[in-house]
Image 1 (cartoon, rainbow, N blue to C red):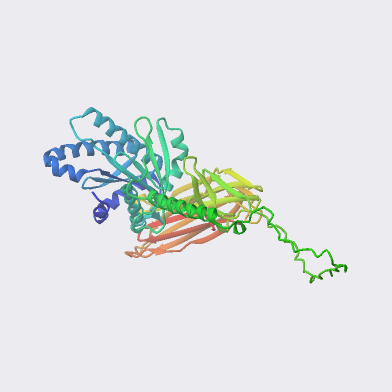
Image 2 (image 1 turned 120 degrees about the vertical axis):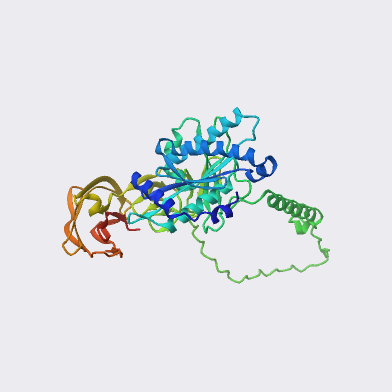
Length: 498
């Protein structure tokens, strides 16, 4: 099934969105990993083998995929679109694990049924935030679904392709997984998506091999025919140059031989000495010798997997792939000697940082990123659903940030405690009581308790907007809530400033 027909079928029903929202609430996550699958050559198989044969094969396909996806409540199948399946996972590691298991089980099925055509399924994975203010956003979800389907369309049957966001979240897990391997194929343009996407492949190395996209070319790579044409032109140019050098006059070639000088006849009868006056040359102004310009260091990164990295919190870092087999990327920025920090954004409350030092000359730097996760609490409170009982939550976490001026790491220990309660008033309105306390590094950072009144029988949701309550050099803490009728959504957390 082609991508366009898949995308035109992706209008999810209200029930399907509710299923997604219920699943992610059970998993307590705002980020979902989306899986797209598709059977290679299914249309042609239908035309050649007939409906009954294809129906039986399709049933086996559905059984293997659904059992694998939903085993252990890891994921949930949302939609069947012809021979394609869309599923979501709360954990990216679960999505990759299930994708590998799908390919393994299909491989075993194909071996066990040589009388049947091989079931070859391509899989695409992409991960992103889909929830804001404790509500799944259809536009955000739709964009991530679109990207997952585009990534799937690059793969051949039997292969698993994923975006950078998925790889970044599972790279430690994949290294410890037996018989599991990964490969970076480079940047590819996806139809309808502005920026190129880094495409990674996951595969079972005991029976599968990685394979780059067949129907697309990595951004920045010249096709072989172009390289051959350029080489041919250079060869012809060199040949013409060599022939010209061979037949050029020796004077034009700059020969080192001393040219012969024809002497004038000497008059032996001349009795007068010839006086030769020295030629006075005009004074020549001697230009000052320019100081040689310092050559900026060459910087190469190994393991640079950051998407849209920022150098020293001010400058976008541009790199180009130099050696795909070793994952070496060269910096296109001039990076001066000294200490530096690269960071990239995952969400407003998650950043990944890497420190490194540059010296004069050539630098080959192995980048290791460390994640910093700011604490946060989300409530969805309903007076009727909770029977008026208060809901309490607390969280704590160690995280870090950097002093922008000195590039020095600063460690924090943040703790948040919050409580929501509510009651129905005599006039039918609902009064909520909200209280929270935030401490950072053992000191009180913010604390408050207040009441919010929600009008009776009002379907309009009233939003407070984000209210900063505690400020730090590179991040801040905030509170935000909205309410309608007898329900209130509350978020107390922290966010990075840049």
